[in-house]
Length: 218
Length: 227
Image (cartoon, rainbow over all chains, first blue to last red; front, side, top):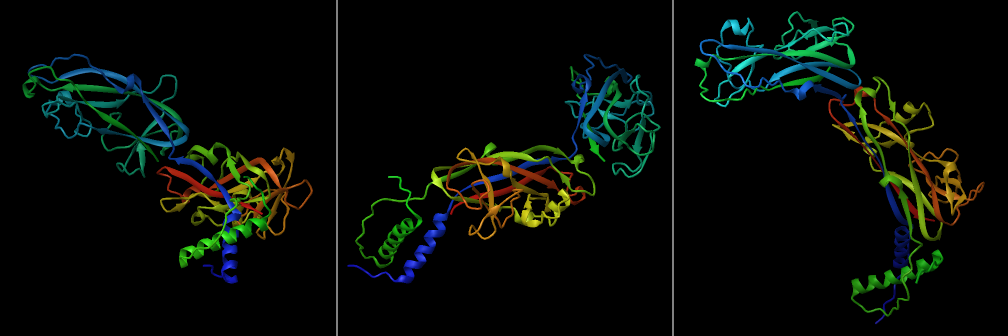
C-alpha cells in the first residue's frame, strides 16, 4: 500500500535536512592557563633539619644544648611583599616546667616544643634571627603590631621569634614591609632538654621538634 | 561509492529517504523504495594544532597591573581544514563562555575601539568573577588553499555575500571562508591551512580573587559549514 506524502511534509523534511547537512564539523579552541598567587620559594639550609645527634639528659637541671645556625632563603618570581610566621607543630604537647635559667626569661610565646613519645615535650627550643649576612647591610626587621593581622608594623626589638607574630624585612629601613625578590635570613635554634627527673623517659627518645615557617603575601 | 553530487540531488534523495522513513514509523505502512547509495557531502575536518589549546601556563598574580587590563602575549595555533574532495566551506566561531564576557575589555585592553564585544570571547569565571576576554584572529596573509595563496573572506549574512577580510578578527556574527586572491567569491578547496592567533586580556586585578588559583577557561567552537 502506498501513501501520498503531502507537499508540506516534503518541505519541512527538506528544510531539516538542509540544516543538518550544512553543519559538518567542528573543533574546539581553548584558552588555558592559570593565574597563581605570587609564588615565592622558601628554602632551608640542611633541608630544614637541625640535628643534635645524641644528647643525654641530666638529673637536677635542664640541659642547654648548643646553638645551631641555619639559614632561610626566599626567592620570588616577582618582587613580593612578604612576611613570615612560625607555627609550632608540637604545641598540643605541654612544655615542661623548666628552670628560669634554662628559659632565659623567655615566655611561653617563645618556646617551641621538642615533642615526645610520652605525651610531654622532652624540652623546648627558641628560634632567633641572627645578625644577617655579613656581606650585606642588615635589613630592618619588622614585626606586626597587631598579631597576625598585618596592618601596623614596628621595628622589632627582640630577635627571638614569638608565636603568632608576623615578621617582615624592610631593606629600605622604612616602617612598612617592602617588596623583595630574594632575601636570606640567618636563624638559630637553641634547645633545652628538661631535667631528667621531670621526664618519664627511661630509654632513648628522639627529639622531634617541628615548626612550620609560613610565608605570607601581604 | 564516493559521490559528490550537486546540492540539489543530495537533497532530493534525502527527502525521499526521510519521507519514507517517516511514513514507515508513523503509519506502519510499507513504502516501496530502493536506496541506491548513501550520499554524503564531502567530509571536511577542521583541525587546530596543539589539541586546540592556547596554553598560557602559569601567570603570576603580580604580573597584573592594578587598575589596568593586562594583555597576555598573543599565541598562534595552526588551523587547517582537510576535505576528502574539494568543497566550499565556511567557519564561524561560537563562544562557549558568553556568560563571562566582560563588556568592553577588548577595546580597553587593545586600545582599538573597533574591537567591540562581538569580537570579545569570554575566558570563564572564577569564584563568580569574570576572568577576561580574548580575540580570535585568522591571520589573513597566512592562509593557503590547496597550497596556493588565498584570500580570507568574511560574511555577515550567513554566507550569502562575501568580502575580503583585511584584519581577520573573528566576530561572533561573522562567517569566514577562502577565495582566490582579490576575489570575493568562495573557492572550492580541498585543503586550507593557516594561522589562528589568540589574544587574551585579563581583567583588572582588583576585580579578581587573586588569593586563589584562577584557571583561564576560554572555549570557542569553530564550526564548519558547507556552502
